[in-house]
Length: 462
Image (cartoon, rainbow, N blue to C red; front, top):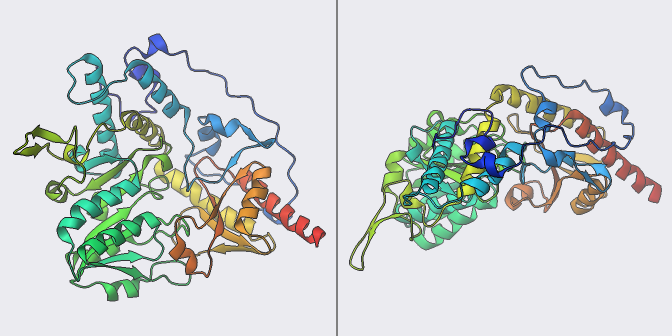
């Protein structure tokens, strides 16, 4: 079998042997477009310039997403919950169907044809992740269920061996719970302590406080590359360099970052980097952990079982080399196939052009939302991704999300698994609109129009 291309437009059906015999031809016509409801005029928002970014067209990207052509409550779907999960292009959906229809098998130890084919696809996915992150080798990549499992793996394997009484784990207040709770659990076990790094008023990490907190007691700094609730993009490279002066290791949570701007783990000099496939247009239940090779080699298995062993006896068990030593049991093979397809699709675009488009769209959305009476967008750090978390005077976040859903607009409401970050602003919950490369200024206009209708309805009621 020829290893699937890891740089092309997508893992097509014909890349999997036998798929052409069992899969129907891909549809060539786009799904029927629903007739959109007429928008309510929002003069200030409508007066904003339309976005044009050379090298990228969101309309072209949208054609690859079947779900973006459905309706919700009689309105065209507007998916603004990308911080929770992204939608999947047809290339990913087709790759999953083709795999299960023509190449389904367990991997690595099988001698038959389909086992070899499945293994080649699985390891091609590992190579694609390594290339995507700028890692030195595919062997630096461990497959996991997602960012949460990756962080727990580091905490339980590296942390248990390297943390002890009096050691510090520095964690910014803006972190997702998945980058707080695992450290609390291992700190309790090892008698280390988790030390919060405060935020500035605009939602950035307080760099002066960070520098003051660092010491030779610091064993690990855990930071997100982009915040899921404030959108903040910290100066990770500079923070990592400063931590390394104290011989501390740095784990970077890249869950929110990888879909928005290019990542180079070697340039960052990160010791660990984790991300989830489902926030990168891939299936749920698959993610990856990068670790520097010398660190990975020293990490003991967290879980035991099949695939991660070399030999097993009742007097002695030896383990497989990394990365397989840290991948117990049958992996999420179809998830890796889908991740490979997602990376192929995503990297076919000019990444810098995508980042420029999303930045322009976020600026547009900020200006448009400012026209809504009672609107308060939280966080204003200068470097951020297109995440807009907000409150609306007179309405709790759940009411806002329910109202928007009636217009087919999907946003998230709640604490966003970032309660300390919201508490920094005196909040327990908020609404969040998170944008992706397939969102448009017209969708932002619909969001603004719906929010203005909510305020007008409230005024009429009162």
